Amino acid sequence: MSDAVAVGPAYRSSRRRLAFLFAALVIAVLPLLLTSGYWRTNLTLCAINVLLAIGLDFILGYAGQLNLGQSAFYGLGAYVSTLLITKFGVHFWAAFAAGVAFAGLAGMILSLFAVRLRGHYLAIASLGFAVIVHQILLNWISLTQGPLGIYGIPPPPAIAIPGLPPIEFSNQVALFYLVSAFALLAYLLLDQLVRSPIGEALTAVREDEISAQSLGINANAWKVFAFGVGAAVGGAAGCFYATFVGTLVPDAFFITESFTILAMVIVGGMGTLIGPVFGAILLTLLPELLRDIGDLRLVVYGLALTLVVLFMPGGLVQGWELLRRKFAGARVAGGR
Amino acid sequence: MSEILLSAKSLHKSFGGVRAVRDVSYDIPQNSVFAIIGPNGAGKSTMLNLISGVYQPDTGSLTFAGADMAGMPSYRRVRLGIARTFQKIRLFKQLSVLDNVVAGFHIHHDIPAWQYLIHAGAFRRDHARCREEAMELLSFMGLARRHDTLAGSLSYGEQRMLEYARALATRPKLLLIDEPAAGLNAAEVDTLLDRIQTTRKRDVTVVIVEHNMELVMTVADRILVMDYGQRLFEGIPSDVQKDPAVVAAYLGGELT
Ligand SMILES: Nc1ncnc2c1ncn2[C@@H]1O[C@H](COP(=O)(O)OP(=O)(O)OP(=O)(O)O)[C@@H](O)[C@H]1O
Ligand SMILES: [Mg+2]
Image (cartoon, rainbow over the protein chains, first blue to last red):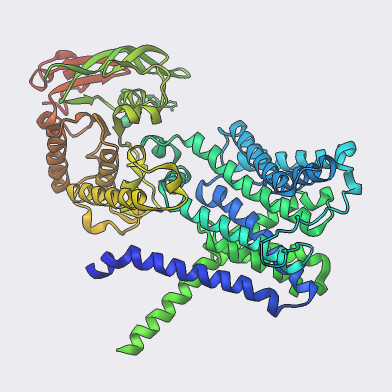
């Protein structure tokens, strides 16, 4: 047993590296297997939703702040970057950075105002924020063209690598690679963050704020930090969404989107990063697989959410753990 | 030895109509064990909350190691060296015993900012050092074997010991413990007594709020007796029982 403890961290980090390579491989292969435009669209939507979900999970699962404003950060990232590109001719990546920064800043400001609110009150305040942002997008017609929407948003400019043909993001596969590479990078960075003393501080705030402060943890500052990071990641998803779909309408960022993202986090297993990844993939693809039911999409979300909360509050991650333990148990029993 | 670590000057604190602390002053010498006793509702926990910064006094002042504590939030006081436990235990119940203590090292990490995103050498060293020191603190409190357990599933006495270990992780100069013996069995109280004495030998000043008189009389260098928010008595243990006001407050019960 002491042996296992001694080799623990190194073993785990090599397994992490393997998992990372495997994820990269899956990302590389998927669009080659799924060649229809329809499935490639879904793949890219999965990557976008993964970003939204891990961003929310950082705020909700780690810092314990019930944020229902993720749809607003999503929308702000999308609109800020798009307006900079279409109205002011800003370069895509500069606009992307601005969209991410703006969403992150909005998250921090919301959190600063709501810093004394907890649980239900924070949920209502952040939901109110999402309503306000949606209304602004809808009614500031001179800027956003309101419900008419913005059309013809260009793809990111091609990247030229000397000696190779340029990477054109008008190509669906290239764009999928771009978004999922970014999602993978965001995942890796968040994973490092949550397994650092910053993650320890956030978790302490989630578990007991007064207790956390008694250890020197500035609870309010860490909440603002979590909101900033999580909202910025949501904003990045928005930038990609705009350039991917090519069209922006305010209703893409209606408050129901916040609940959709929340469902992804809860179904996947909040407070783990890997859970929401699978939650996002599942809840992106599930409604597509059940396409015939049309508007019952939300019912599926609701049902999945209810079932999970009732029977598996730890989400897919908990289900996986249960299976694994059962399987491992059976194997040990069988071996003896 | 008689240098003053914490000095309170005519503190007042009211909650609506309840005057929880009324005009209380005292000095706590460095490297001493200072006990606060008194009947239920006397204002002892409120006093600890004033020192740790959970509450701010309505009037009056607190000076810790020469620094004025006015308006200073609790998390900043920890950096100056004030740590505490809670009368109603407040552990991170969903975290392991070890992680509870590790969280106590929050103000003592030594990691360059970029290594929070890319864990490298300094990060690993810090990580290993914190866990090692946390295990030492757990051994000190007799919890080493339980390091993997969820804090919430510890016995009541173990939870008190864990809160004590977690507070020590902040490396305090002043440790505030609120009824650390409540709910402990006799053996655990003996262990606690020993740990408090060891803590004090390690140059930590201790303020203890406690109803267990035997423990208080053994461990305390000075005792503050409170009743209805007021200071009844302050002095050395052997004088407490002789004080008529104190005897009256306790109706001669617990103290004789
Ligand atoms: N946050 C609060 N809000 C309102 N009243 C409070 C608050 N905290 C304490 N009080 C009141 O202040 C008085 C002193 O309470 P305190 O908890 O300091 O007593 P105590 O001496 O610690 O008692 P015990 O031995 O029962 O722990 C009590 O009347 C209590 O009801
Ligand atoms: Mg009390």
